[in-house]
Image 1 (tube, rainbow, N blue to C red):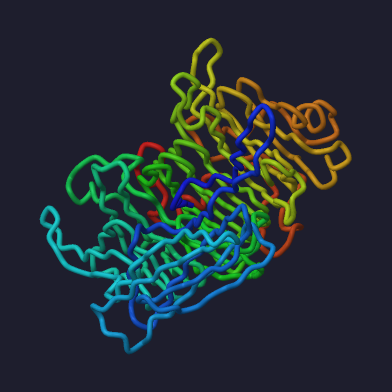
Image 2 (cartoon, rainbow, N blue to C red):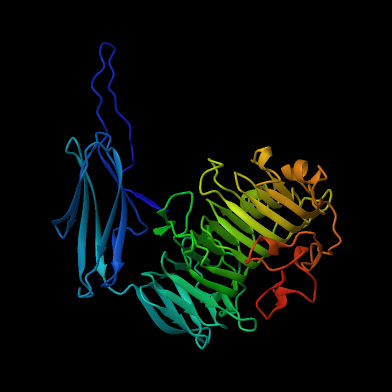
Length: 534
């Protein structure tokens, strides 16, 4: 979230002292903070809504908040004992308002000493979305950018290029035909990036099939250039499922969170997202996304930061591939409660302490609840089975960096079963921050093979689950999975189908059973680490 401060927020008293007496305090004037991404202008179409959120602060107490439209009072709110408050402003552009017109809104905060602070914004009534055709290196492309307030379809017969931000809003649906390749414009400016954003209440239907997957990729491929993991900004989806950070969370001007655990943000199936991760962005980000959303058979390939970033929500994910990820493979926190099965994370990217890159402790899987309150509700709880994690290699005496495997921490708990973890130059499997009475009960870490790492097990993954001998947790494997091979498993006494209907019967340790049962080779959607299609 980007916060624009009208003035610096100084909730300080300014005492003036002398050696004989203490004068009365002078309280700081009121301050008005706008939580929004634009600077001074908002663009919206007739019939659609504008939402602004203000944070009001006044050390002497808030007296009144006034909204002016074109110089006349539009609405007011009176206060009595508050020194801080949140004010949500909503305005729907009349359906018959003329395109090209505008309104000037001024927001004024008055404190109990009749001092004021204000902010002015222009609402321009014009088209928020543009579509055009142009030739890029001999290829005819349909260029789209801006906010879409109605349903929109990407046809497989056309080549689409996303120019900067393309957002789906107003409870609309973006449908992408199977077999489509969607390109994203790259920029030399480090602050500019292209990405797809699906706002709260809207949906994306990107349902590929085995032989006709949907690919999101860099426009450098059209231009005959070599793509890189920082070319564009990935896909971000905002839902209304619960999070332990609140019911109305703002992120870069988009709202997520709520009380709808079954929220449906659409379908992602037989999808590959590649070369995304510019300026801190991730491959696929799911914020407050609900259990009605389908995320299956999705690969993030050669991304710079986190391949799959989950904040709260109830979404479950099946048949995932994070291949060549730079930072973390999968990171979930803020009360995510979901299931996972058949996950592969493999990377050759080194992360280091000097210089620090990828946070120097990047992991294939990171599961947290909350950084400051380990039991904050709703609490991160998961059921995950059939996982293969492969690092960038461990060799005694060779500095391969500090990349690590799986870490369950900060109050996250659940079931983690049937996993192969190998080739990490630091600790590979780690469970921590939980009281002893929850281990083996609320937190189960079983049928695990962690081998060929600098440290195979650490913290409670070592003491409680490995060294005790009470669990099927070992530091060797007969699976055949190693630095360069993602295929292989070994039998397990645990079948995840016992966990519920989401799970497929798979009584083996690892994500891919064998060559004859290899879901990564179903069609031409999944890339190997070297970029070839499996």
